[in-house]
Every structure is written in structure tokens, then in C-alpha cells.
Image (tube, rainbow, N blue to C red):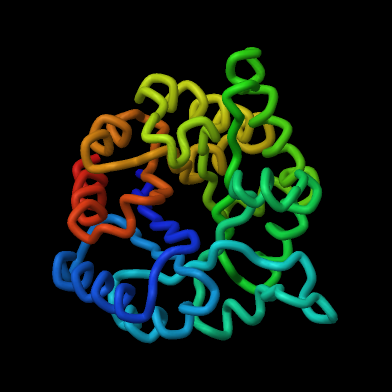
Length: 252
């Protein structure tokens, strides 16, 4: 049985005061023991402080990106060893905003995945199609290409210490979301693609849904057999909403 995971991607939001208030509410609202893994991914500048706030709790710390290089003259970047040094356990790689806005291609995402794992971080690998690609019937082709780039570089065994997140780009920050059936179709395709290399790893790897997850749709999404939790954007900034999403994951 795969343990559900809920990861909150705060993107470029927050302040010291707002973050402290949010974490306090989450810690008060979460039970001492929960069958769900919970991760928060604040902006780089708040990682150390949030790490201290969640220390000894059941909330893990994650970063929103990582440099593909381990050290050197890379102004503005943060290496995997630095993220680990400030308490990160997880890191998001290949988010659609990084791919689209900052032009991170499949090869660079694969290198970031490898760099994260080299330092013991758990990558949350994002894959997903744009609206135009979906309308052209290219969803499975795009997702397979993005996944294959990582598997070819890192090997399928790397998924033993990684998470995959399917995030349809057309459903991020738009208020739209894939239906549970649409999400399940792509999640099943991802699992089948991994099974083509190793059936046991495919059965064990967690695949999250990441397109406008909120309390109102979480339970139906998480009921799908291949949806193992969520990569949550805007709703992760609202304690009550995020707690309800975590609770929905506990029922499956």
C-alpha cells in the first residue's frame, strides 16, 4: 500500500509573519500521528526558518527548485547540498513554471533530478502537458518524453527514492482541474511506462496530482487507484484548506 503524500508548493508567496502563522495553524490542526506524508515548499529565503518551525513535527521541508551543479560560479542558484544543509528532505524538479518561464528542458530537469538524489534529497518530478498539447491528443506522448529523459539518465531504480507529480499545465492556477477520470488515465499511463522497466518499482512509486487541488475536489481525486496524493499550489497557503486536503488523503 502506497503511503499518500501531500506537498504544498508556496511558489513566490509569503512573509516571515504570514509563514509563522500558517505553520502554527498547520501544527495545531494536524494529529500527532498521521498516515499521510506532508511537505511544505517555501521560497528559498524562508527555508531555514520554516525548517526550524517544523523540526520534530510530522511536516517535512522541501524546496521549489535546485541547481543541476553541486558547487561553483552559478549566481542566484542553490545546490542540493545547500538545501540538505538547511533541512530539506524533498525538492520539486521540472515544475511547469520552471519549464515554461525559465526554459528548463527535459535534459536539464533530468540533471537536476540526479543532482538532488546525489545529496540524498527526494525529487518530486513534475510532468504534464499544456492545453494545446492536450487538444492535439499529445498528452501521453509529452508525459512519456518528460519521464523518459529522467529514466534514461538516472535509471528506473532512482524512482525508489523519488515521487512523480502529474500536473496538467492547463489546470495550474486557472481554477480548472482534470476530472478524477482524466487524472487517473494519465497516472495509470505513467505507472505503466515505469512498469515497462520495472514492475515492482512501478507498483511502489507515488504519483501525485498537481492541478488546482483543493478541499472540494481532493477526496474524489484521491479515490482514484493511481492517485497517491497531491502537489498543492494556492490551497497550500490557506491552513484550513490545506488541512482538509490532508484529511481527504487519509481516507484512501
